[in-house]
Length: 173
Image (cartoon, rainbow, N blue to C red; front, side, top):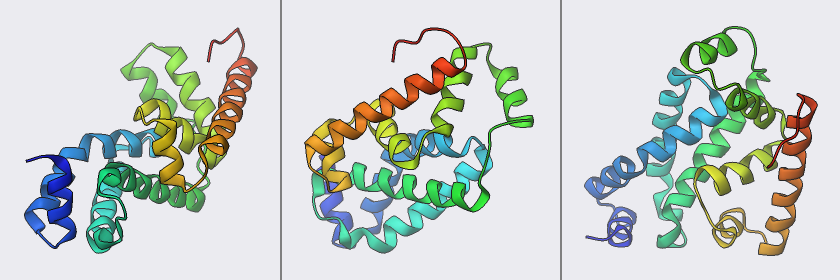
């Protein structure tokens, strides 16, 4: 059965179909949550909350083909709310834990630069480059014209480039 039929069944109240959808997209939810929250426990809690919110509001899905985008958007909104509550700064133990897992300092600098961006820029870059969504899909998700999304994407990339260059060296973003 294709994804759109499963989504349609979930919208119509089929709990098994809904659980199948969550199972299909759990990795995408985890990666999105982790890119924002940087803490596995918080990400797992976020997935639970997003699953609940999606279940409660599944009837509000306007376009069956954009279910994944709708679900990711719920995760992004939840993560942004959590970050605003905590006014988090990546430092201390989180950086030490990251260094213990990888010697890839470029990845660490990229994470720091992403955290330093405004919410909209971080959201657009996450949707475009971590979830490989097309401009058209991002525009639909954000309910904005494609031209606006392209402008925001260019500004986000420019800001990211500047943040990375502040840390030293030339960057090809």
